[in-house]
Length: 614
Image (tube, rainbow, N blue to C red; front, side):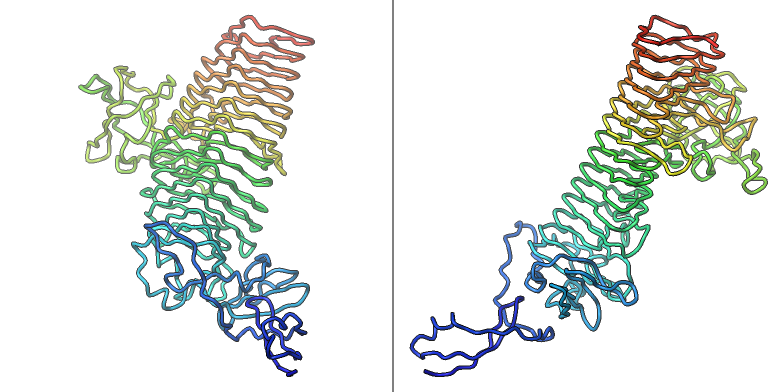
């Protein structure tokens, strides 16, 4: 027999040494009797291993392996990624693994309470990688876990922007400059998982973002960040099947500050908190939020704000699910408390109106907008020129005194640019001297078939499940389901800044609220006109099913309330003209105040129901 010494290494698992008695003739079988004792890991030692075998990739793509980048799965021993380590910011605790930039990219592992550290064998962002030209490359990330190093000149997949990134793998972001912030990429992305990496609109802010089947996981490195951002009126975002999961507190899951087109479908956002799940501020063309899910505890879930650059036309918020947010579930909002966001572009009195070749010509000698006289306290009117208004065909022409609205066909300045001539659609000729405006807001948009499970604000804010707040024209809120919370549905027109002659009224004209189901709220429905002597006009409340809660309707003209099924509600209708008819009231009281021109039709009364004028 011969005593032989040996050293045995199994890649990514353990290293051992020992002695065995072995017969030279049975070397191959006697290894089964090895007595092995684990030794202290030597992470800096580069172990010999078999070449990694890449998975098949699409014909038009190039695998990341072609650039010498390999996965780290053999090093992480099946442990779960816990985050990135930065000096003074985080300390690894509990079983799992962390990525650290400290004299190289390192993997810190804690397994069964034992902590080890070793250099990562491979990562994206080496100097050789950053010198590559990937601008025309469809990059493929095979199954596996890869490290993405960025920062301090290590720009990797951000400035080194590829044509697209797809695959089945996971990218973990770490910063080279010990800055506890998230890495960035900006390109078409499909199928992969990003950990501590966000999709940022820069460096090419005008580039489209096409995101399919993408997962973004962020730990709490920093607060108030947006995992996905778009900020250019030339850019389109198309997202489908995107999952955002984070321990961080977000500003928005999707933050669309400026965009040409927006389509976000079948996506979900889960975070410890977010100001907005999906926030859309300025979109020139179409906006669709369809089939998305917003997590609990957000301030608002799905919100679009009016865009002073152009009328928001045909926006769709459909078949989304909202869970227990604080302030607003799904809404179209015009911010009448900000001069930069006010949907009234300019006010004026009509100087001339006559029939033209392609529509009605309106001449406006003097244009007005709001002037701040005492900061935050007092406001008045000032004159502005045609350049201040911009291209009037981006806006809606409203005859304020008649509650009529028209699309603008064309416009041109005159009187050295201080006056404006516009052409509106149709053949209606308004009276000279009528008070009118050019406005933005939401036009023929819809909030439909959404489910909102509770909106319960922590403060005295109303907390609306569904909202159309100022600047709404011919929109539809239909077939939504609201369960619980403080406020079910809110639609309002409103005045702004207390300015009169002319005033700056944000209209609600011709909107339809129909076939919604609202259960167990405190304030089920509010349809109001606020902070002004003007009215909402031509709005309709049709065939809704409401159980529990108050309903308040005020300051409406040509209002229709028909075919609703109300159970256990108290309803106040005040200063409204129009018609109230049809439907069924069960244990519901309707009080009508100061409504001489409200016509009452036939309504079925069940239980203790009553309709009375007070």
